[in-house]
Length: 254
Image (cartoon, rainbow, N blue to C red; front, side, top):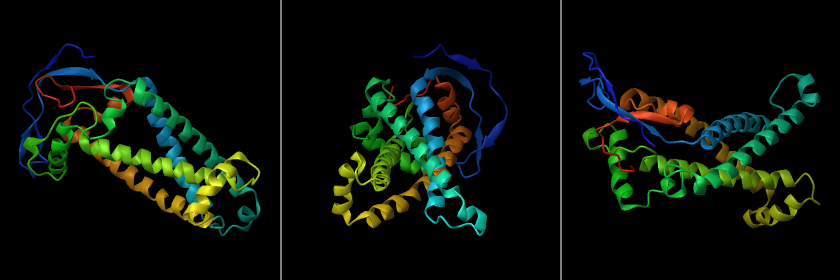
């Protein structure tokens, strides 16, 4: 869905050209159009998942060394019990968002469905290397334009989903140890046995946790960079659902 193009008056100002290594680069002017990209369920899922991941990372690191505090009163109280409760609550939210996302891979628009998450089409494979060069500030004039996710974003977000799936599975395996008579224990204990026991499951769960702080930092940085350099409202689109784009640009995923 797109709205009629909107004319923005030309401006005489200039902005720093990151791709031009500091050389003057004219500010964007001309005709723009509004494109609707992300449905409300996906936007709600995005922010709920972001909240739950931050909560899980913080509480997970606190659970890892439970006696990190020098305060004897905290160590002897039910403090870590409440931290574990918040951790399990965050896990429930994350799983719920995963179920919504799985459904939206089928029910969403063309920017949200499954094919938009994998750079398997010829055009995306060709544009993958061009996108890498763009992020490296090399040959920016050849940058492919995408309304939705570009090939590198497709790979990174798919990687996040796969990492998260491993985290959920190993998390359920750890949670099931609390009750050997539970269904979770029956389902996931064979997995623990297959990989070398529960200490190995815990190690995998802990090591992969470090992926999320690194991803969040890069995700926020790249989003801000896109808004400043490309001026296409990448950040606001995940709030409003759409963004203004130059009417004369060709987009590979239109």
